[in-house]
Image (cartoon, rainbow, N blue to C red; front, side, top):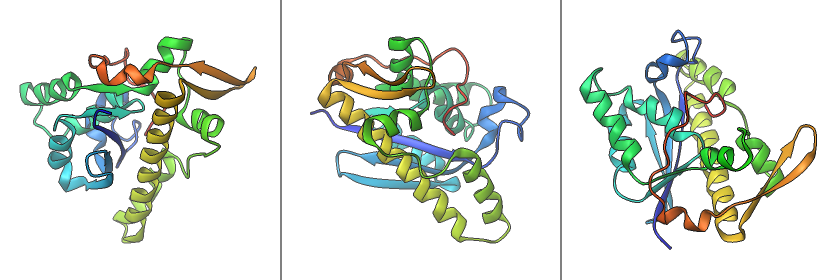
Length: 212
């Protein structure tokens, strides 16, 4: 199989903190995590490591994520100066090999669903926390509770693991499940075994407020 990365990050600030979703680059990263199939290890990046994270993301392999193109990449781009340099950095990320699970799911069923819904139904594993709690932990870290940064890193690592396991389930078994609020458990047939041969998936229209 082709090598691949699985990526997620948590932010320091909410959309409300920065004046709206049009200002995603200003949210800044608290912790970013990449799982790399080349060494089968998790790599942790903190605020001061954002450029190293960027370099890892464009290092070649397919990048797998859940809403990472329309959200996480914009956060990473915020570490470059506004203008052409930031635009070029974002274009580099988007033009690299990408497979955004959320974009593919939306194309298949016509709506966005949360990673937690897919993970609970497909893997019987839920998210260990949520983005709002991670934001609270970051403020507590800034106030002097240094253990909170490790809690954010652990949460982000779990999200990466869940994303990886959902991706591998879909790739290897050809289907995933999710919980529909009206109809209950639903199955989606997917062709993720071909994801490594696809061109980069393109960002959805506007930011998606599901993965923080």
